Amino acid sequence: MSEGSLRVAGEGVAQMALRRVTVTLDTPTRDGTTEIHILTDLPAQVPAVAVAELYRGRWRIEGAFHELEAAIRGEVETLGYPKAALFAFCVALVAFNVLRVVKAAIGAGHGIDAEAQVSGSDLAEEVAGTRRGMVIAIAPSVWSAFARMAPVDLAEMLRGLGRQVWLAGFRKQPRGPKKPRPPRESGAKAKHYATARLLQKRPQK
Image (cartoon, rainbow, N blue to C red; front, top):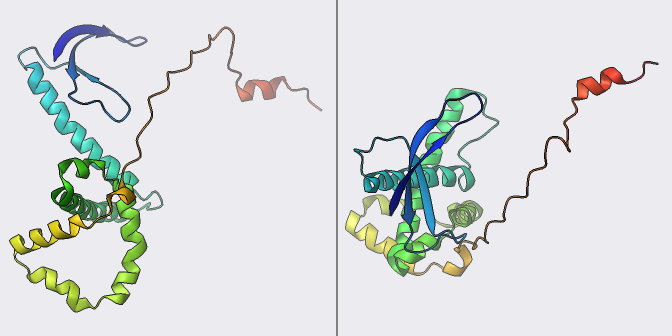
C-alpha cells in the first residue's frame, strides 16, 4: 500500500487537493487489475489503511446493490407510485437475503472460494424458473417443516444441500481484459451541429 497526493479541477472549478491511496491486491480481479486507486479528501489524520478498509466496506454495499438490480431486478421502472416502488424494493431486499443464504450454503459445502464464483443472476433465474413447479409438486406441509427446525439443524441441512449444487451450472463467466479507450477526436475536426440550427437554414418552400 502506498499514498500520494494530486490536484484535480474541472472547467470553472477551483482545484481540489486529494489523497490517492494505492492498494496492491493479493490476487488480480476478474479483468486482471492488480491495483486499486482510491481518491479521498479525508484529512491526513485518517491513516491510509483506514481509508482502504472503509472503501472495502463501501465496495461490498455497491456489489449488493448491483445484485439487487441485475439478479433480482429490484428496481421496477414501471412503478410510478413511490409507495409501490418502495414496497417492491423491500421485497427485493428480502429476496437478496435469501440469495445470500443460498450462496453461503454453497460456500459451506464447497469452500469459501466457490461462493465467490457463483453467479447471483444464474441462481435467481433458476429459482424463478423452477419455483412454480415446486409449489405444485411439493405439499405445503413439507415447506412448513423448515419453520420448526432449530437453527443448528437448519444450518446443517443447508450445508448438505449446498454440497449437492452443480457449481459448473452457476459459475460466473470470466471477464476479459478491459479494452483501451479509443482516442478522442478533436473538436476542430468533428463539430457538433444542432438540429434546430440545421432546420432554420433549410430552404423554405
